[in-house]
Image (cartoon, rainbow, N blue to C red; front, side, top):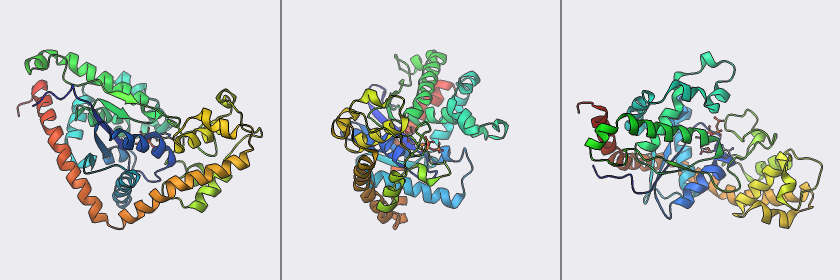
Length: 346
Ligand code: AQP
């Protein structure tokens, strides 16, 4: 196996759990698109993660194709980069098992996402939901990926992936050295959490994350929303009675205003300062109109392209199958070496 951990490689994933939204787009997918220019990228539809919460099988298949369509419609190039669904590459699950045995229960107990998702009924959460971060570490490290673009909510999981890589490198230092890897086997992956919209908040509550699973559709802009739905949701978005401030400091303690300005900045590919230079002291009604127009101009064409792609599911399935074959070609030698390092007879 070539030593791959000195090169940069980008890996990230999106769960096919329905209601793909503006937060997924701005926090993750637009970053995925931008990174293609300078890196080798793998973008994965993480269906193994999705089933940590029960998914209707027919909906799961549809949602897997829908996320793939969103990737392509947003500008991810599945020819020059790799787009695939996680369950077609069995190495994710195999490496996750090894990492289940490397990660400590104390580490998992600190994961805030598990606490939020399991809620009060923790005893009834799936075991998969609990070890979700170990699978995420496997997703990244199976490819010796060095950079991982994610939204702010995934920062803690990325730190855990680094801890797992470090502990594996320490625990197996002797066999890793014997295999010819002087600086450790797994690279410590860097999170890439950048831009003005790393945490897009609910349109109805600026203290809660915009989320796929939130019951009310009015809390989020879906990637498949039409212009009318977008206009209605933004018009009804919660705000406060003050006009917009002219400086970013004035957004402190105004979570709803801060969120809408952040969304505008991200869609316009600028920063909050420059948005407030144009809209400082404006009323929310005029700002919301401009935001609805901008959101429509960016999202509606992507939604239309997604629909076109989804009309030909066999084409999407072929993209995923080809992507999985190419992902295997990178993963298999890394997994094989991992097994040798652990002491498995192959
Ligand atoms: N609100 C958000 N703002 C910015 N980035 C976000 N991401 C998710 N929500 C926001 C980023 O999108 C990528 C894919 O997320 P995911 O589908 O794998 O998982 P998720 O975080 O569970 O998505 P949701 O919408 O929050 O689902 P539920 O409702 O199940 O909790 C990740 O990079 C994530 O950071």
